[in-house]
Image 1 (tube, rainbow, N blue to C red):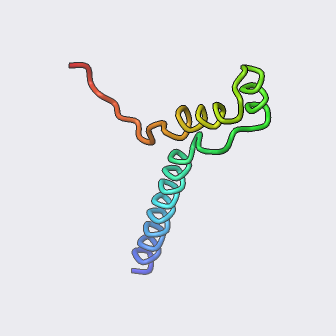
Image 2: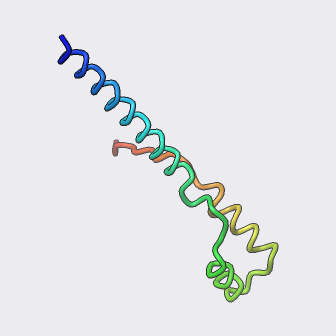
Image 3: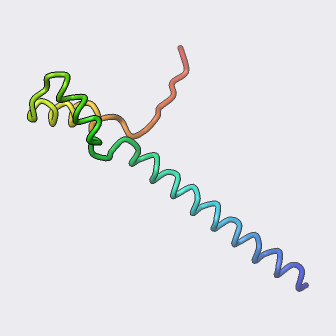
Length: 76
């Protein structure tokens, strides 16, 4: 009987750990690519001839508005 209780506790801990890991991974994926531009990236855009307003617009259009979900569609 004690074995069953210990097994149940282990299962609960394992399930909770798995769900926590999935939540952390989902949060990491949703935030991927959402950090501000690095100084090297800023320099690259500056050398490309973009002024401050155009760099900000590039950032908003290209990086912030990317889809957050990966939708796989089967070819029809």
